[in-house]
Structure formats: C-alpha cells, structure tokens
Image (cartoon, rainbow, N blue to C red; front, side, top):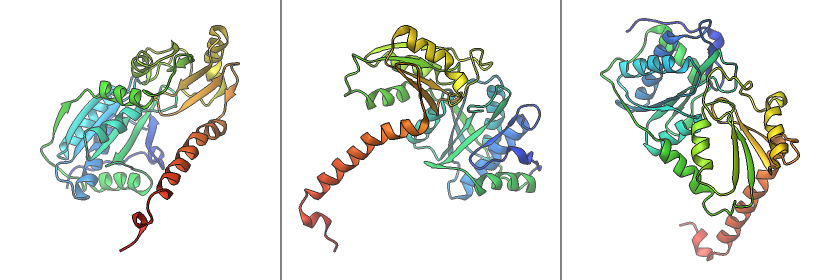
Length: 295
C-alpha cells in the first residue's frame, strides 16, 4: 500500500481528465494519475510497461508533465518523453515506438487556465470506467511501486514524415491554403509540414504561446475563425484550416471565408472514404471464389 490521494471528482470525465490548474487540478494529481495509470497497464499483464508522454504548449503543461513522469516512474514504467507537440503526435509515438500506452498533457480547446490528460492503452482509447478506476486506485493507495526510468525521444520529424507521406502522391501545386495554429501545440509541425508539400501556404499564429494571445484555441467557435476568414479573403486563398490547442480538431473556411461546418466536412471527406471502400470491395469481388471459401 502507498499513500492515498483523492482527485476532485469534477476532473474525471468520460474521455479525459481535465480541470482548472490551481483550483481543481495540480501537480499532485498528475503524479498520482501517472502512478495509477501505470498500475492499470502493469496489471493488464505488461511488466515494466513503456509509456509515451507528451504535452501541449500551455504554460502549466511542463510542470504537470514533470509530475506525471514522476508518478509513472514510481510505478515502474519506462517513460519515453516526446516533448511538446500536438496530441496526434503522441498517438503516432505510441504506434511508432510500439509502446504499451501513452498520456498527453493537454487542455485541448479549453481556456488557458485549464489543463488535463488524454490517455491510451496500447492503441486503444482509455475512457469511461477506466478513468474512474484511476481515482479508485489512488484513493485506496493500491498502487504499484517499482524502479522506473525515463528517456527523451524526438519523434517530431518522423511524425512529419508520416503526415507528408499521406499526401506525397497528390498534386497540390495549384492549391493555396491559409493555416491558423491558434498559438497551439500544432504550430511547429504545421510549419514543417507546409514547408514540404506543394502549393502556396500562408501561416498565422504558428508560434506556440500558452497564453493564446490571438484568440481562444477552439476553431469550432465562429468568433475564433475571424482572423482566418480575413486572411483567406485578403490573400485570395482557396481555403483556410484552423487547429485547436492540441491539434486534434479543426475548423475550416472556404475561398469566400464561409465556415465549413463539421457535418459538411464529414460529407466532403466521406465521398473519398466511400469511394475507396467501394474500390476495395470491387477488387475483392474480382478475385477467384476460392479466396473466400471456408475450410
């Protein structure tokens, strides 16, 4: 048994842990969350699990990341610190490094004073009752204790390579795009990616700044797209794309600066996905019948 800790219940959400730093969330919560998370992964059958940890550009994120690493190593994990970047880079790192899990320190699209954690075990999301289990283990003091370790690993260039690879066959030379990172964690990789793909790219708010001086980091709110809309109209661009604080959601505007809402984006993207699925099915049906036989 170890010391016990009680989380503020308001920070335990369905898909993440999130609160206001200094009020409902602090470094002590990060430490116990790290220890409880590694306890769960260990008891799923992975001795000395490898856990990737990243963080976004909020001012409170480095301190929370330090405490999280402390807790994870206390429980015996081998922690791989990937540094500051977008949440998708954390997901990439877990897969790229064949890690046993990952934790991202991020307040996502919320105000600057907010922060929290997104978690994954293996390649699956960590949510619901699993998040409640973190609190139960910490409150009971039922936590693993071990000799963990940590190391730094820069996966940013490998992540950029992977993203660029997805568009390597596309001819983007005639495309002009406005990009707004909102001073969030996607800023650095956004600069690297747009520097390596075709087309004309105009970037704003690409410098990571946890005070979010330009606007609130939620591109699903129309008022946060005003700057991007002006950019697209003034520069006569084909479209504009804005990211939230940790780069895992976007807002978009067309060449006239009109907002392309989420359901409209889904319909646009679905056409290619459905067409690709139909092509795959057609290919399968063209193969010999014995390919599908059972026994």
